[in-house]
Length: 202
Image: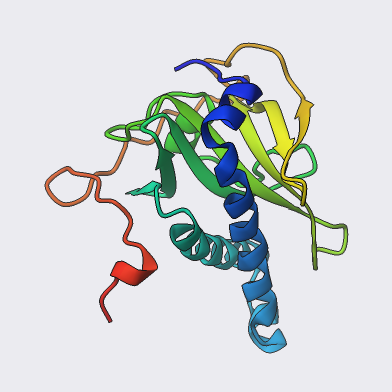
């Protein structure tokens, strides 16, 4: 798959940028609403997982036209069978900090994810302030292998653009010597859409 330009994304899903931003803001607010004792008991990675789940819950409600796929360790929101979006915590260089699986590396290299109808892969993420207790900025990012092709800062005015990297998609990470992790399928080898909150049974 090829890289997509900022303007193409804005023209296609510009009206989704505000609910994408709000999903992350509300997910973090829900984390802060947890008791201090429970928050203190979680390690940093567990905190990111909890915040991610909160964000996904809000996004599933605020983005009703998105088709949501649960692909092993990726939960993807797909728009117009063209853009696949995942939510992540970002560092100050707008990159994810966890050790990526083979599937995540493929996603960031703009490679197709099996049975997910999308042409371009995007990441929506939040950057924490230096204290780690508040959100400093919210971004929509076009990943380009281990780098970032461009980002859109999701402000209250919705769009503030910045281009970080103009190189083509990297086929192989320089420090990547491990074999890719194979895609895991579910239930008769089909990927099932991730159920929205109002579709779940008690």
